[in-house]
Image 1 (cartoon, helix red, strand yellow):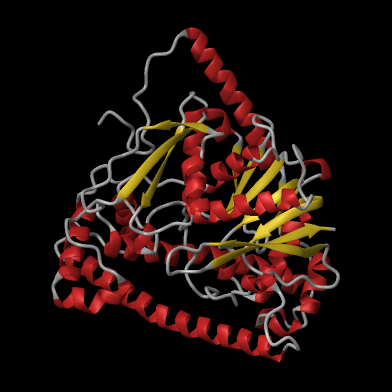
Image 2: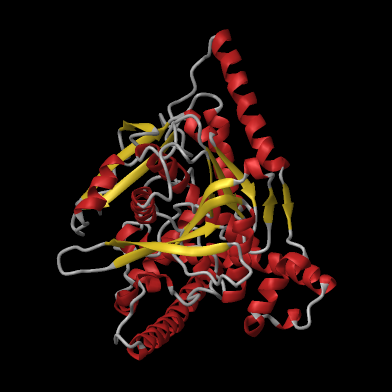
Length: 488
């Protein structure tokens, strides 16, 4: 191979002494910036600080917090942090099923849509894909997804190389597929009930309909008992850019105002749960930190070279992935992102324009990885993110539900972005997260999220508005919403 399997980078070249010194200096600067973030104390909020949340969320409190006191709160919060982090494992197993159904890097079998699962099983396609995936796990080569899946299966006690390991591994994968099929039915019922409740509330209004555009934020904690997924893609980044433009037009964000931002749970593109955007022909990648930097500079809200992006996540995979990218950036190596688009599935013009411009303020175009022949209608582009932008992105382990960074006022964030995060939590957990985000924001700072979060009367956070972004295409009219929570 002529490119690094991790991130599509050119092979190393010998450096001059001056280049080595420059590299060491850049690495030292990057290390200093990272230590500044890590030096911030990661706190579990005190009982006193969460008492208002406990009071306003009394009907939603878990059993362990009835008649709470300092000791019960401290014990519960630390125990619950472990429970939340354990949900990452189930999310990884969900991703393994997505790979089984949609992956193309380990098999020549056709992909399987969930609604066609029974037919694919009868035709032997499902069995063939299971066999091919198990074979790939046994001999993963440099395929990062198969290497990770092999490690995940070993963690659960399955050795595909053992005499009975292939059969047992296949059964385990099919069991997880069956689990997801059942989960989808529960989630569909939950979503239908939520929609019915919203319709009843709208009908009860004097106007006979919803007068609140932000009602699109009401997603009823749909995934509150599901594994924590690392899925990511270009759509949330487009919605955030539209929201930032809206905020600028409303005067809530000004030219050059943004210097410190945080992204909560940016994700890692392993393979999406939706076949329309599920690809595994390029290395795993993260997009949102670089896309946010790109949008802020494009809109004039931040100055290139003066922006700091903190990445707050509980996923070791995400943190280590970004850490490796930073190590390469300290050696003057960029970070490649692949941006495929299926032209057979219509996108609205604004989204296409965004896709064409994504990365132009933070990198340069490079030759994209050629997709397999199974995707004849795939239009591709790729961008190499500049090393200085990668080094501006600093990861930290943080559970936003139960932890916060204890930042002095000058180092607090102007902006925090959290898309498709809080739908995985119940109302009480969402209320805790809102207060933790608020504690890390400057006065006037904004949290942008596509979920409505419960703000109690004592909260410093207020929902000031929402941006509604249409995704209209021929025959389809859908919308996404992002709420603006401002620190008072």
